[in-house]
Length: 145
Image (cartoon, rainbow, N blue to C red):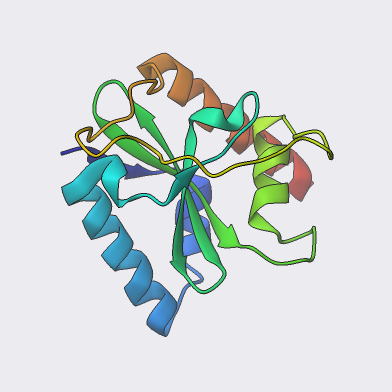
């Protein structure tokens, strides 16, 4: 089963969770550590983001995860799926990874992996996920200025 790591960005978001949302998030982490990608809901579609998986944690709360070939599940980002683009988890994710799907682009929700995999077959290389995490951190820091 994969080792679970959280990015600093995810950690800062999780610090604001309370009550049922925090309990649901902790249960999600436990399932992720024991079941790997089988615990995830679906994969995003479109260039760049197609290797990221999403889990509906509770209500509008979403967790975005990248799996690396060294059997690590990286919780990249945690946020709510709202209509307000300033706090919408998907809009912010697109900004952080540097890719927004075309407005007319059909988006589906394929499974994160097949049932027999704990890590998706197209998992990130270790350097790729480290680069993605670093990019997300830089973009988040720049937006705070």
